[in-house]
Length: 377
Image 1 (cartoon, one colour):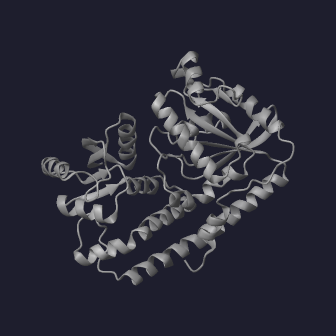
Image 2 (cartoon, helix red, strand yellow; image 1 turned 30 degrees about the horizontal axis):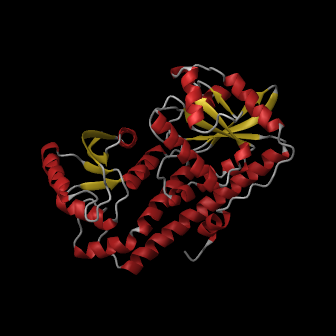
Image 3 (cartoon, one colour; image 1 turned 135 degrees about the vertical axis):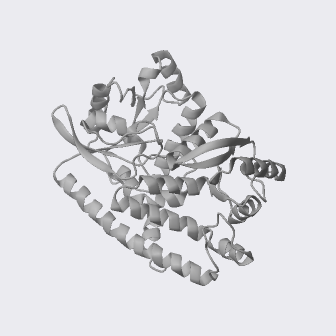
């Protein structure tokens, strides 16, 4: 395991998530620096903190310095030049986790596309900085000219997009086939590490890998589940996370698009979270589902890890989320099996209430299609 110094915000919930990201990426944290602001112009942090960081880094000698915010290329360059160490910002760290977690050929392609999108957005500035002099932590970009560098990335992106397009068409054929056979579908969604995979196993009897680490699931897995002797298909999807950039959602389109075509989306919420964490993660899930175009009337909420919280506290948290008038939530424990049967009954109730399947319109559909089909990009 490699070592790291973590620079993050001075709020415990943000720090805890950053620590979990580092752990999932395989970094042992040697020291944490917490700051109120991480978006100062030159380094992201003040020059005084940079000096302090330099002193700490010389003593601890970490492999990397993790910066829990998105850095501009110039900020990354400035930090790398000053500290003479590899700098990972939040997006790079998430991409490293994706790379570690990718298990299928499609998820490997999705990760490659996300990495190239990240690289493309920083290409011009990186080329300019490379001409000043290549620095540690700058991925050894060499002395590319802007046009050559851009064309190289575009060519690689197009190759990957073509392969993903074929995979997407194959997935669409599978969906059509399932509909023709009369199968209704259920998808699990939610913030990463909320317990989606554990719930998936509890509902299906599977033994799919589950972990407290972030982004255990990157590839969609579909299995059969029986409710009241009626067979349905259920899928597990990649977890959401705060400040997940649009290009990452686009790269994982073929995985996340299952949420658009499913009959019911079960959003898994960790009800044992603190009030602040709970509201933040709930808002992140809501925002991502809205951006994907998922219809609210197809969403129900599984308040997972209810065995860790008493019912009065659960009711208070439900009220804080604005769900007290909704009948589309239920406290469950994927680990102990509590209320799993009642969750199935709620799913069946929502499915039975759907008269005719409707075409789900994604407000971002044209943009996403352009992203994949624009051969000149």
